[in-house]
Image (cartoon, rainbow, N blue to C red; front, side, top):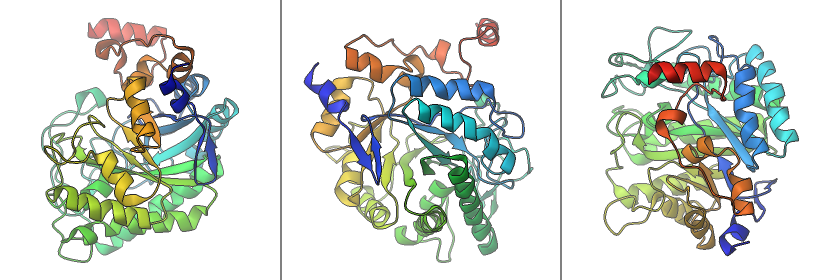
Length: 373
């Protein structure tokens, strides 16, 4: 076994949970649940393949936490009702029995909502219309609507939704919760000074714009206790603006990651296009390096880490503690097994694989693919 393979297959812990290796399946937007957000057999099969494939942990797609404004996509999975909870139970249990930890990513879409079973309007920290159009591959069409600004009461309602969903996740048997604070969704909208132009305690300085994230972390931790992992995903890029960078560069990173490290999170999960690229301009730290330096909590790196040697180097150099992969996991749901055995990895084929519906190679998938071609 190569040295990098040894590194990737060392056990490591997050809080009181031991992960059998350093590979984690990254959250990927899926739109395969029932119309009301209830996960189904197809969703179970989708997640099962990663647990069977040897991943130490699987982070779910972003699931919406309430039956108000949080849903972002039609047929997106939810964790907002008792029905949702009961449907997730066997999916979670199946993955755990196959040796994987299971983490529910809770996501409030905010202004970046293009389909909601419950509401016709959207909300954000301030009135805001996301740039560009909705994403057709996720069922969207046309421009985003302008979101309504959240009142103080609305902010409290959002936090209560996260807390209720965290309780449902605990009761469904999940090992952990990840708050989606990345990619332009609601928590990230609070963090962004170009979206959040509030003049109260939730707007203005970086510290104020962090308030919503830190308060949500605190409230969720109070609900689930210390036994569940609690993490947060952070990015600079937005789904509707992949080139966005924090205006304050490394100083913003210092403030943000220091505050998150001082909160009750057990880990920080970085979302980036390339985890090895400078994050704040030429000759600067990467996002992952900044999170590791300033937070003091375990860091999960994500972004173009399909090469095992590159992934291993981040761990060997104490830049990251875990590696999460997305596109490669779609192409190779058994990536950990292949890497451990020294087997080749299939290349990612965007045309054949990048389908947001969680289709496992079945007749319906092949029929849709043929129609697309």
